[in-house]
Image 1 (tube, helix red, strand yellow):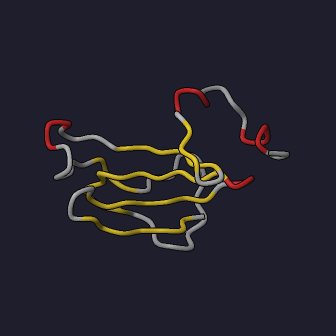
Image 2 (tube, one colour):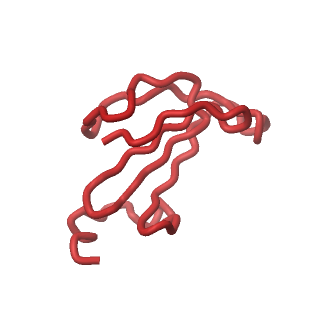
Length: 90
């Protein structure tokens, strides 16, 4: 479920999505957004278009991606191959 859609002067458009088991993902540096708060989305849906930001202009066009659980950021690289139901009892 999309829980936040905002625009930041430094970070571009930002979208936050709440998943099962308290997992949240955040996408920023978006050029535009195709979702609104409350939308139920699934894997493969396009939430926006990659863009750039004023915070790190040298990065060029990209999307900044965060995974958050219990207020803590998790390195997305450590989650490759992990199924979300592994967080069920945490």
